[in-house]
Length: 231
Image (tube, rainbow, N blue to C red):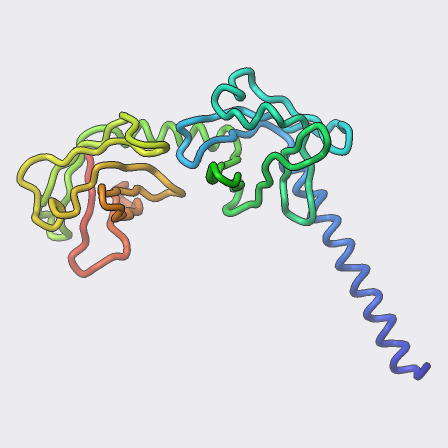
């Protein structure tokens, strides 16, 4: 074997060994980070369940505990008996035979999403962070004013905690709104990944982001921005 080829093969072997070690470290780090209390929920927390992921070994996986109300809130959780890390970044909640009940992947720091066919997306996030989000939603309920960048008021609306559809809540416009907003006619709202979503009966969605002044600004931004302010 030519010396140059031999050196190349040695270098490749070393690179593969390093990559394998890095993958093992990634999985081990994720496992360590996941131990603790998590909230499993529908996308906007209308149905929730507290899951405690443990580091103790179970058959083919690791132990967990589900709070007593989980099966009533999320029926599929009755099949969950253990958890594991699959591949580099999949957090699996599995049944007694080791089959996946739902697989989660991280979409934002500390927030994992999993899909169940025919049901939709579920969220797994740190329990303390989830409860902080719940507090944020409670703070959103009440009367708001929509204003333009000039400060001119163009509409009033009320965000409620009345459930409209799964994960969405009712919103009501007040009389004498700007025609563009009256035409949009939002009927539902929710918080999603740090954004406030207003949704019309036709399926149109307006997204607002919180700015530095604790106001909510329609995105994408414009020369004459639309801003929501607490009344």
